[in-house]
Length: 346
Image 1: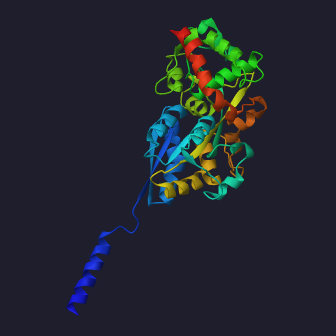
Image 2: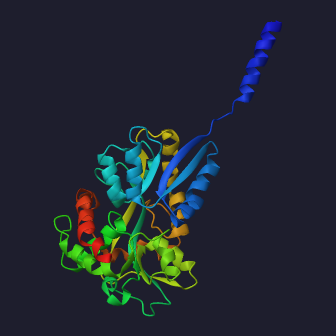
Image 3: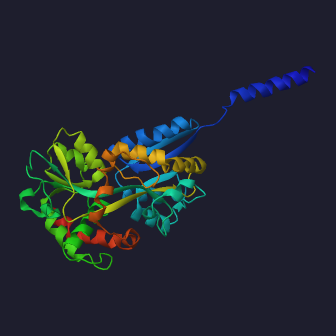
């Protein structure tokens, strides 16, 4: 009897020493800077509050190409669970076997996504919509530039900042320039765009603005830059009028960020639960309100004054882009940049 009581006590003591639910950690790769700040507050923190047994660690990256490099280095022993990256880079990662498919078996919210948030041959799905814009310092530029050709104006020599290829800002601007200069299929030939960017290059102070392009425009380090509408709108709000945003008359491209589930990630089950939440109408609307990204879930309810500042109101100016086709020529475009564009800025 005494032995039975003693054994029972030991078992009870052991059970008391164990946590009811061991906390899982989801390692999340995403964009640095303001995106990290707003996404954490609007999506990650509410998710963790509702799921105290799951911690999401956000590891900031400069861009999608940097994320792809990190995932390639980890392929034999993955250390990440989720990557939020541009769809064209996600296609490359899918082709290299880095991701598991995000479908209805992962989250029922996939069924409510807009058609252009799902892609043949891409394991992940769209989580945000955005578009390229010009941003300018109002002290340096008194009349708003209304054309992408402003980037070629010699008055801005040494006063422009933007990311170069392989980042999608550089490639996307090249696609716009190609379209403006008579290009009809950048997949087959983007020479017109490369030649136009060669004219832009002498005006560029830096192809690697730190920490991002937006502060360099706000503080007057440069006068003109190329950025994404969402982050541009937020930075303009906080600039006290020092920076403004322009959608040029020639149009823009639609950029789509995707959520991708890393194959063999250390916390796959918890990662799937986070993806389910991130694609929900609630989370989608919250992030749109926080940073002016258009939602990919058709059931998200967004206030009109917020929607007016997203890409939704500029869809008639969007230049169609075959993002999957782009993944096949991205390396070649990058090589053209390295040989024909970047050297002209030195």
